[in-house]
Length: 399
Image (cartoon, rainbow, N blue to C red; front, side, top):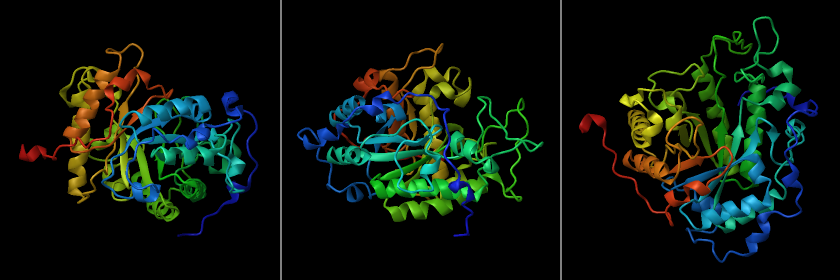
């Protein structure tokens, strides 16, 4: 590995800024207390997570757990109960998001960029509880949309042509995805998560910001002629071996369009660049986010099966051309929310359609995205136990 400058890691942590939504984190106990009660925990194979989830063929069906839910003992107990009674066997938990870290780091360099939004109380006990209930803990790490590190370390941010920090439509600064000091910071966070007991580290916002025409040009001082897709691929080439050494899988969240756009998106994501390096790719194939007419569907939000199947089937074909035969290399994010003003409102029926599309496209795993981590409206769409449902993959050329 090349020598990485870590000057920015030694800077002071930020002050105020993220807003105080951490009252739930002040409760004295975490649902770790429930760890002693494993009466309802489902036997899903070996007790040790490393063995239970090392096999690539292991089905992962997950719920997203946001920062605020993870800091609430009551909400975590409710989500664990959902997993105990359904096919859900993994939680994707915010451990580093736009507001900073959601854990108390033991790395003196990392924790200086912790932020002000609090952290999960008694994280080790929570992980022990999840292990006891045979729930795979997955650490979600927001990578380059890091307003805390950007504010603390302005020398490592994307800039405008005049040299001042570039800001997105929400006024946030991003750290520079070309900057190897930033890579080192994020990889150190990931390795700490792996060693702490997370079975998978999931890099989100592993991309460049959208270059909207209404915003100033983005300037990357360390690009040196390297393309955006290649830079992201190189990040994974460097990160994944270190995450693996820590004992976890190394995965990436990507835009849904990456499965179907032949080349690279302007944000730098390209299937052929990322797929060979990440253990799992998680395309965000939310039907509500596809424009009218996508895959010949006039109203994508109203046709969840058609949208998800077309997107995931294309991903399977592209993996085949790369000779990637991993049984669950693609694990899409599915829509467990409703967009205001769009019909229909999403519930159990729409979830079932999305799941069926994944299985028909030849995969077994998926993750549900609810921004508020509210899944009760979708419970009727979950099976009571984990059963493989995927069908043999059939290429469009052989149909």
